[in-house]
Length: 166
Image (cartoon, rainbow, N blue to C red):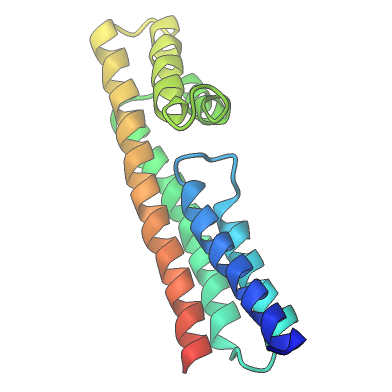
């Protein structure tokens, strides 16, 4: 086996590892999911074959990256606002995701935001029932945002693979 062939195999292993790790980032938000997909595509482009990818792949990846961030943000905004969440509640949900990444991962990204939003809403003088409603909405927002991100990430990978194959 030639050195170039061995390197290509190693690069493909790295690309696949990047793509798989991007999905781990869905439940462990400290891992930059989208950047890992871009890294995998970059490894292919810069180390395997720059001429094989058409303009469609980078264009679609940019559009899908924007869609991914928008879907995540809008899902959180929609569910928390619909449940009557306060600005403090929204802030605590975000802080909870960050802190939860380090506290009993991957469950911390669900438990910590829920508890922090519940406390924030109670501090805002909401009833326990209202506070629970917002905390549950935060949980639903996390799940729907995660599902949307998983679908978009899969679309990004499929766009890349199809461009490489065809």
